[in-house]
Image (cartoon, rainbow, N blue to C red; front, side):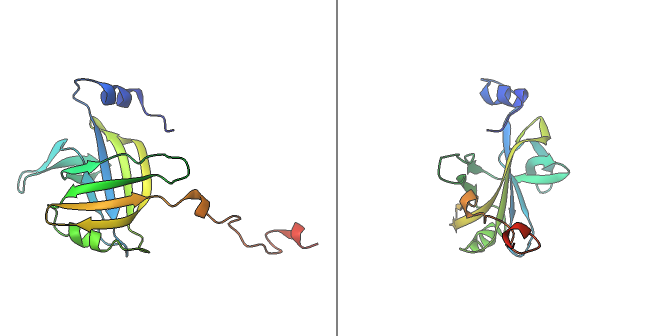
Length: 168
């Protein structure tokens, strides 16, 4: 379990506060296309013409889009997974989801920050989009991490140079 800062926990559990948790989402399509930077809260005004809200994290602007996101669950026997639902308002958002097919490697990075300290990442996940769908109103992405059991063991080949004790 990650250790969250005291200010983050206080803001998360407070009844009334000016600070709030923000989920940052980075979606990188296969083939290293242009990464989409999306956030869950309109913390600051990014531009006046066109009117855009979002947050600035480490110098990168994350555009606010109405979204539903639950933090990935941690259940025994399954890798962390969640479903992200975005309002279909960003151009080419549907094109990004169309690229999510079985076997593709669309990378999704989830970061949790506090609105008053957007450069301090409280928790993050690097995941892969496993399924995507869209319609005129919303775009849905199912994201998950590969199971740890899928990691090859041992990671190296059993050769004389790597494992001399096996070949006596």
